[in-house]
Length: 119
Picture 1 (cartoon, rainbow, N blue to C red):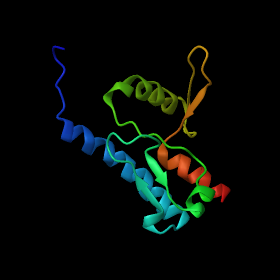
Picture 2 (cartoon, one colour):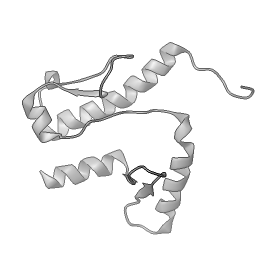
Picture 3 (cartoon, one colour):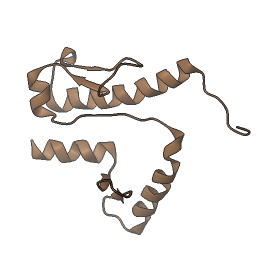
């Protein structure tokens, strides 16, 4: 594809691990979990990207997490920025495709603020 640079496999893996580690570290910090209770998946490993290893981790963070760090999401960011421009309230983007459930998109920090308040 012309105009599109190909990313090295090692760079792609590092980019993916970067987002996984951000999420893992936020979970560990918020719930004061021992670092060994959560790990990120290895490239090519099946299942969720954030592996909750302890029963405590599974209890305090009941989410199955998939992390995608990609430029393919540019359109979502454009729409999210539109929601931010409307006013000073917390932005939320709702997306839906045919025969699929609607999704709500908020910032990662806002999501962790919400679950911290719920705790």
